[in-house]
Length: 328
Ligand code: LMR
Image 1 (tube, rainbow, N blue to C red):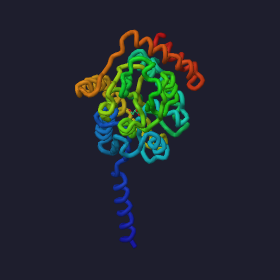
Image 2 (cartoon, helix red, strand yellow):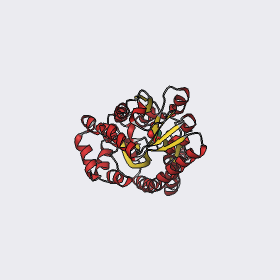
Image 3 (tube, rainbow, N blue to C red):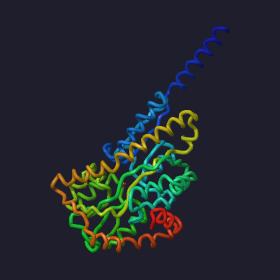
Image 4 (cartoon, rainbow, N blue to C red):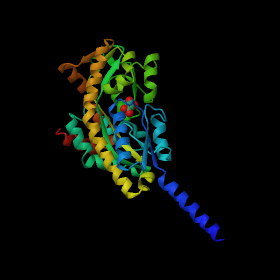
């Protein structure tokens, strides 16, 4: 009897030990290449998190839509099939949090400094809070950059967009933006863009140069216009139940790892985009065009009304608060 009891205690102790040693796994899924600002920061977060927790946390990064595409990844996060994502701010509308589309408004941020005032201030915080009722906790904003436009014809003035099929992310603001240019917007998952451009399903698209180059979109787009008409950035998000259920010391370590990965990400984003634009130029296959002052004025005239048009969707208060912060 005594022996049986001792064996029971021993096996309970062994199984407790095994479960105590099993790492907590964070599956971090994203849709871009590893050598983009987001891709590199995801890897940096993995290194920092695993080190800071002495291996009690294991971060598995799945880049390039390997695991899930745009829409699926948000569903997977809510279901707990993945724990961490960093979708672009243009992709939260279908989740019912339309306010994030404010980041897509043409010319809303005159500079990165104006953007950081928003993402690092009260507005940024209150936007992340809106995700909580959806079972999502927002941890940080990650940067990418200002967007360029591309097609197989030169895009110099708004009139050049007339009738073009332009791929957009799922944001209604981006839909309005393309319509304001006279184009026909088409929502497609990021993973489908290259092929859609190659086969003529769409004629053109927009993205910061780092995304365009790493997906080789320039190989199927003869013209790129550096228009800086809009911004692309990310929110790093986690499944709230998973996050709240972590031991407090682990959560603290992960918070710090996320802070450090975010600092890293913001430091590399602009440089990566500058390098990508240079690399596109160097291929000699795609003409990279810089708008002159008059063309810039024409673009602004065509696109600025989108800010007013979208007030009913996003909230006039939010738009004017951001414009005010930017000194407009
Ligand atoms: C896109 O879908 O165009 C991009 O925003 C993808 C990304 O996550 O950068």
